[in-house]
Image 1 (cartoon, helix red, strand yellow):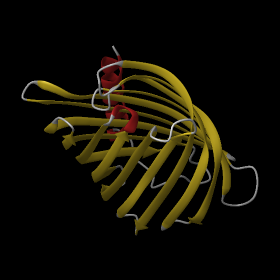
Image 2 (image 1 turned 90 degrees about the vertical axis):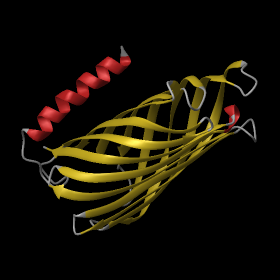
Image 3 (image 1 turned 180 degrees about the vertical axis):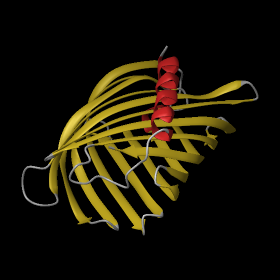
Image 4 (image 1 turned 30 degrees about the horizontal axis):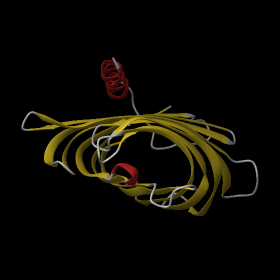
Length: 248
């Protein structure tokens, strides 16, 4: 059911994006942004190399001193008819700009399930602070830190099921380089350590490179790495495809 709903939403968004002229970015009158990235990819996991379908749907709202982001992604792959990836993630986060310039508060609720990382279910929720060292049209560099509550249902290396909860420190570094609104390099890097167990940590890194063809259409490549150390599982994804977006 989840896959059918995501597929339906992706089709609707494609119709919306293609049928409307897009603006370049957020401005004083632009409060909404929607983006769809359907790609094919080459995947390297503990089980070997495989071809994948990798789809992401993002919806952003900006209003006054608050921004909201709703992000859904689904990765599905097989190797020689053997399932290697069936990974779904849904996240809702907000940023609150209410103090001094370049500083803001953030909050996050994130649900994950991942065949490749041996996650049956995972719920992450928390809040923190962030500061942007550089924030202009051509460059962005932001560091954030906070605390997350993690409630997980995992499969350990010995195939034992592990249902537990913990609190994590969540450290994130984000960057973006924009060259004449044509070439954009951006990324986000996370390390999320448990306060209770030294060997219980999560690493996630994403680096994207986009070449704009039209205001609403870009060629996109993305390199993603993730490790769930408690399950001794990791994956490395290189994806390539199109990104469609609309500001309104």
